[in-house]
Length: 344
Image (cartoon, rainbow, N blue to C red; front, side, top):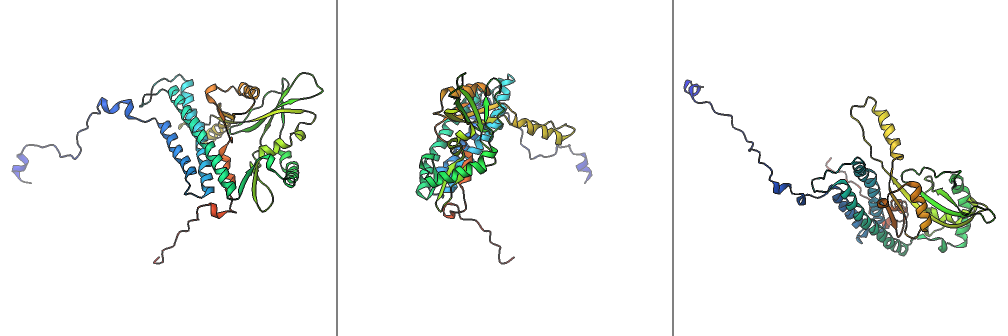
């Protein structure tokens, strides 16, 4: 470096960064943003679209329907649960698109009602197409006498030992229903007893597949709850069954972890136990369920009206994945086998 260069004026070092530009109010307008939760529901709607895609094999379409139902369950247990927590805490600050937590919940419930109706429409369509392809999900009145005999033995040996019928009266309070619990509620009457009708509860066991395959060469299934309903006289001897219904419960399963916790293992164990005991955030039941049974369940579970969904169809579409069997590879995507490059 020369003396003249040393004596020259000092210059600021060159930089490639452009000066930061201020964000205009026009760019921050709420109508320029999309709500995160509504956007996620739109994504799950597109997942459900694949169940209606006739170019896919039938059982793969069933898989997409089951996935959309599983996604929706998780969405409620975590994302909706978080919004409900904000509402309980009195948070009214709007998000970037201008909706408060309470307004977001209202918009979510409206969108979910449409999504769940599409799921039911999809299952009705797929059930008929599966039947035409040789895979049937039967109702109780379609069973042959041989199948009824087989189911009676199957119920006695496999189902009956894991059932826990519960009477609900002043001496026996309503039991705790765990997250994802699927239950039968029953109105009972003892013909020779005083005191009027009594309510009973029958949790459906998780140890047994919900779709029970019947014996024989034909691929025929029947749902677990229908088998149980056929044999209620063995569960409540001496009682007359007046009416039955079903309901399914989702609970708040959001997990909050403090990063500064001393023992993370213990914190996670406690949080996972709390997931099972969280507040009810969604209750679903059949649309044709008796109103007195609906009122009974809603009152005992202390469910808010906006968290109740009456469905015209199948509860718990996530269980449809049990219909995906290996017996019919023609109804599945062909397996992908990776090719090992010859040069390697």
